[in-house]
Amino acid sequence: MTTETISSRTVRPSVASPSLGGLGLFTVLLAAALPLIDFFIVNVALPTIGRDLHASEAVLELVVAGYGVAYAVLLVLGGRLGDLFGRRRLFLGGMAAFGLTSLACGLAPDAWSLVAARVAQGAASAAMLPQVLATIQAATSGQRRARAMGLYGATAGLSMVAGQILGGVLVAADVWGTGWRSVFLVNVPVVIAGLVLAARAVPETRSQHPEPVDGPGTVLLAAALLALLAPLTEGRAAGWPLWTWLSLVAFPVVAGAFYAVERRADRQGRTPLVPPSLFRLVSLRRGLVMIVPFSVGFSGFMFVIAVALQRGAGLGPVPAGLALAPMAVVFFFVSLAGPRLVARYGTRVVTAGAVVQLVGVGLMALAVRQSWPHLGLVELLPGAAVAGAGQALQLPVIFRIILSEVPAARAGVGSGVMVTIQQSSLALGVATLGTLFLSLVPGLGMRDALVTTLLVQLAGVVLTGLLSLRLPRTIG
Image (cartoon, rainbow, N blue to C red; front, top):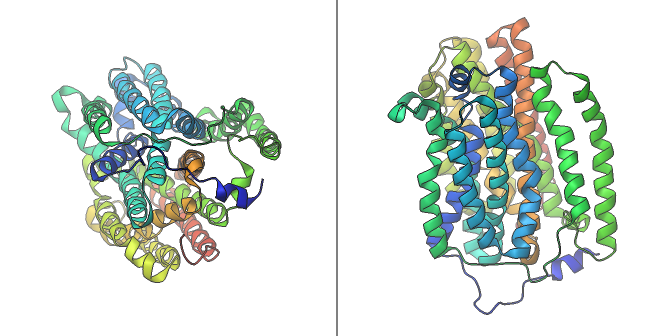
């Protein structure tokens, strides 16, 4: 199957030409925020959860990893099911399931019940989130699509920071004596409102070329992601037992088998779970490569700074969360200017963003070295604000680039692949940079371990900037 064949698979006008209005866009963006907020919201709540449920460090890591791995493993399948059965239908079902599993998390009587509920919550997120981007791709066009994609990127970046801030505020507020449980229970009224809005304002779209679910591809992709993410997220806390090394060795073998199965299906004219021919789109391929170091650095930083501020600097959940408020505020406002900057300067905005982020992370590393352990909002403000501006110039634009050439008929597949790569990279960031930081603390102390981890993140920012030079100069 050629690139031309992919590009020619456009959606034929349906009877009622679906259009996503302002209220519908607000609703899908609300749904896009929920899974990302819940990935990060537990970071500042983990110490409280551990004390209340008498959970070990390994079990607490499963509270984070169980959600992230289930989410990453099922995202592409969620996108395919939306293409097949209707994106609005999957969106409503996924959002309802997200509300129910959030309630289960908030009512969990013990640590293992919480882990199980978090896995189910991740699966619900995987059904809901791919429909957001697929609906935007299928029900908007031209400048409306560019604006919607810019707002999606702004929502995604803001949610990752806001989740940590909101988590700290809710834990400290102890609403009606719920303590840490409120970080999950708060989702329930939001989901109810979202379901009411979605039923009114989100149009139904689906692929005009529906294909059956790729069973072998689904199983092999799930096995490959589990083989990679499970040992990296649990290995350090579990003491790196034999199964973790066997799993890592198995990863390239299973990934190779997945690629072979998908390529054969593609050549036979069937639609595999992840069509290899889709990667012939230059914008998608190069954008996906960029999203990896960006997301690894972002999530790794968020996890490490939460641990360092609470355990090392002695801050409570609220000050630890609010220390990142400047990053969130600046990210939001700068991201709104992104579409205008891209229209004028093209994708070199991403390169400029990497340079700005480099300066911001460097300022934070300098603040840690000079001010430790008296570290908080004031000390981190300059670096956090500058880093937030740099991130805002990158993330929304990269999202637009990745999906710019994906035909509407494959919007679910394309968005599922993109979010899978992003979510897997977020999980990798917590696993790799988090493991590095926690491993360095006993020998170097909290301050130097944090500085070293920030320097490693700087290397990732440099890599992102270099990769951005290979992006197409304009976005289709």
